[in-house]
Image 1 (tube, one colour):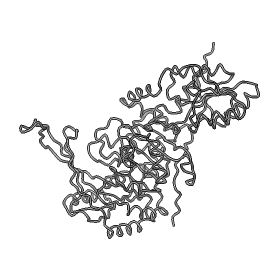
Image 2 (cartoon, rainbow, N blue to C red):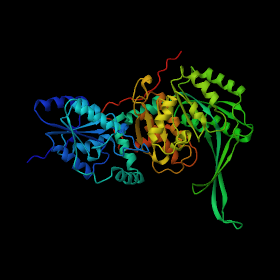
Image 3 (cartoon, rainbow, N blue to C red):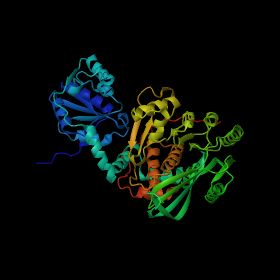
Image 4 (cartoon, helix red, strand yellow):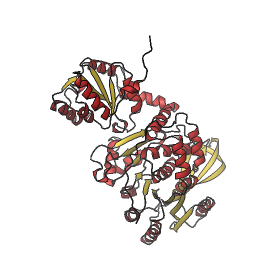
Length: 544
């Protein structure tokens, strides 16, 4: 007896294909049954539900919510990418067709399929959720029936996936299957990335505006417990100095082949001289405004790579009106020469809301890519309106709006609508990041519906020192967007850079060679089997 075909992909179809299949089934007088859900993990409760549905007709069509339409509390769902969720459902013998739904409800599938029967779980029988109400009204508008499953969902997908996610995160598996699925979905192949790193990044002209910082690391030996009090006594062994703040962002850009121009405030002290010497050594161009007596310096004490104490030796000195005019003159002179500009605020005064409110409208008609970030709850974040990408951490974003209760997607939508943002990447440390963007292509129609969102776990999960990972992410994401990539592609390569940064002690620039070496160690990163979708909403710039 010949073996049954194991190719389940034949059951997975597009919405256009589903319309033709529906016509064929109706022509054969078959009763078509439709089920819809997330199916982030298929458990026994789902099997009972689908088996019940199959008994209600001749053909069972299952639609599932696409990755970027699933809104959960922390923005990290789904754990299982839509491609694998579709394959799992298609592997079930009693399921005839599977389709991924681009939206939070099944309305588009119902419109195309017009099923005779729509089956929902018993818990929906008295539901007033707007999404389900719209589905129900659509079914009834052409004479279809809604039936509620008598089977009980005896497992919680959320509980199961929380436990599964912890296990996957612990051994890096979560990032590994994301590498594979993102590669296929968005055209992130080795060839694409090599071209991006070797041919697109080099030569990009990028201005960086923000606070330059000197980062000192003091590596210590744990000598003993001090005799005068129960405190740890340490003995300094050696010190290392790194570029920090806007200076390390410029350093990352330089290491990846770009031509950065750092615009920052400095002091008159030896710390300023050390930082400028490092910039000169890397051949990074800079324009400085001496407004501080002392350059902001952060001094960290470590024992065996564990941080014990951080001493912040700096006093914020807001940019005065005279230096603001001078800085705007510098930006005005650069506006037709640069491909991108990064505004990064560490709270020491280089960036002010007044400067940003004047600089962004000045640059927007001329500069193709404008990005920004803050460190801490800096109010300048709310002045970064109509930029192409902001990259706050989740805590920073929640602090800005004073809301630690609502879901991350809800807060992201509030901020993006207020600032008219094209893209938002919310970094979450070792947990990765969540990318948000409007569904609509036309900026005039942005935010008329729920945001698209994508969760990308950390691609280098075993970090040593998170310092500077956000700066590395911002630098690489800016270069990728300036090279014409989608947000998904930019987020992928930026996450790799951030992970590599976190695997080192201290702020060290990540080079193209290091990124390529990391890519070579990704066995799941294959040549894509589909044409990538470039979904990045972005303002179109015509240079004057």
